[in-house]
Image (cartoon, rainbow, N blue to C red):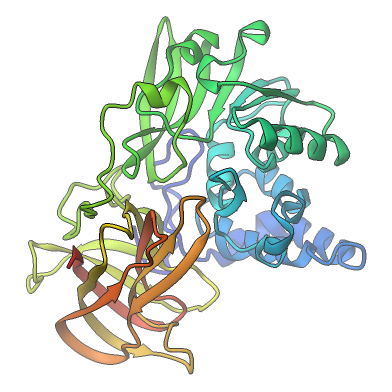
Length: 424
């Protein structure tokens, strides 16, 4: 991941997903986004959230590599605040996943846009979505394709979302309550399939229901170590291409019955803590997801191995972080040591010490509600490699956690190595 300010349009890309650096591209933003800015300003009087959607697109989606103007236009016009619970409306246009009940979440706008762009939608497409959830992904797809067929396994959630999509006027979105593992055979074949929950392997019925030459975007893997793939059907097989590490809720039903590797919440552990694994598509850091504003670099003084992660912060509104999820049971793990080796150069921190180079951990309960937050940070200035660690109590209600490293709104440059997460 290149953290420089140079704009590169010659980088490798896969299926329309840009591999150029996640850093603001000023002239690119003006060129592709000026019509959306204008419409947001015009709609502001009637839609108080239009400006927030414009800011989301300008500060996150375009710097993150989303380039398809049809996808950006759909995000600009889709009312995400309608798809989140009332107590989360004020957070609707932050680039975060939000719990929607039933242990489910609405994915972040960036990952929704990333998957939509990878799908290479056409106006004539018939699309199958597995995991309706809040309905936001289906709403984003609606103006881009002919029909969306979407399946939700949780009955109450499926009923609420069906009513919501109908109320909002999404006439080409067809909802069904059932096990997405089985697909929707009566409506097959489909031009495209998008899966918004993670199985251990691609369900065979979905392969069978995809047209020859059709595309599938799906996260596959272990519970907290998943890879988002773009797959193209050739014959009875799928040719797959890794896009980016990610973290989705698990596919339940028949898919969960076939999962052989389960996380151990009594012994939480992070992957690739010293960043020595080979990059994915030459810029994605394995084991970590939501990679913004950073890159893997060599350092002859690295505390562990030869590679470290470098973050460069110039604008507090631009995201700059790496994330990784783990299972952890607060009833079994009472305390956790959190930390990292950190090196700084000319780091400036404002009044809020949380907006500084940090290692942070967010705690979530069994319904994926955030119940706590701790961090090792508040660092500023310039210093050589130094191990920073703290021990924190684990909330007894905790069932999973997300560890994050990054600049979190501060300016300057920070390097991280040897991330520490150790039960005490």
